[in-house]
Image (cartoon, rainbow, N blue to C red; front, side, top):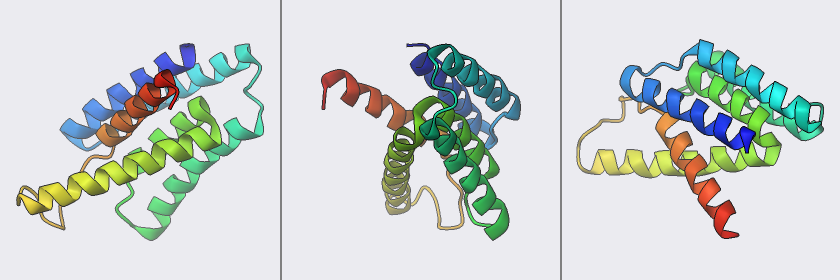
Length: 143
């Protein structure tokens, strides 16, 4: 329960910042990352391969964005690093896949109605939040 609330709070804060300013507060990533570590420590799951690999996945996104100069922002990498601590490898992979699919659909819609062009950047945080909400709904319904 603590992990779900922490992850939802983190993604909510980041989505709001990302939507308004196209930035992610690094302070939130540090605070919620530490919260995830403490919660995982009390659960006894901090030092599992899945938790480490989930965080590593986000760090790889961070590195890929810096090295390639691609459209992957630094904030996106930090968000995926922290969510990896909360969700583990497979949960973070599911979150990332759902968010990328939603972002692609959202970008296609924005292009179709001419609200955006191909040069515009769209915030990824709201799509991560939406994907996490969908994951929680599917988990609650047993799907």
